[in-house]
Image (cartoon, rainbow, N blue to C red):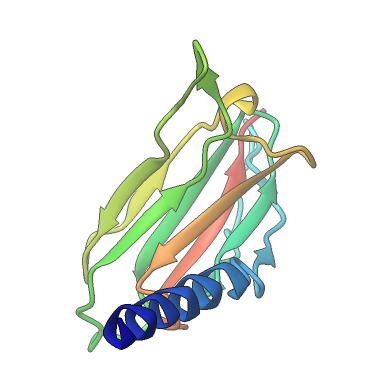
Length: 143
């Protein structure tokens, strides 16, 4: 009986700890950079902050993940772009991608009906969390 109470107490503590953790508390807002049809842009890259990102989305935005900031980085990251859509009442799966130490990626575009939150932003997370500075990223928007 004492064991069962102890186990129940430990489970309650674990559940409370998980629920009480703020998700995306340090989320960084990235401003999309417009790509012109008649001129080049110098893309400004943001160093990965380890806590996630958000950006205003018009349906013509692309997420650019560049090569590592350091050549010594070899961690694999899992990128998740949150969807808010449902289909016949079922949640649509988030968009996911994997980026390795030396493979840049471009993801998108992100349809507003599926990816925008109530503020018109797209939420992006990278695992493992807390590995700030591994990669650089930018959001580019086409006309």
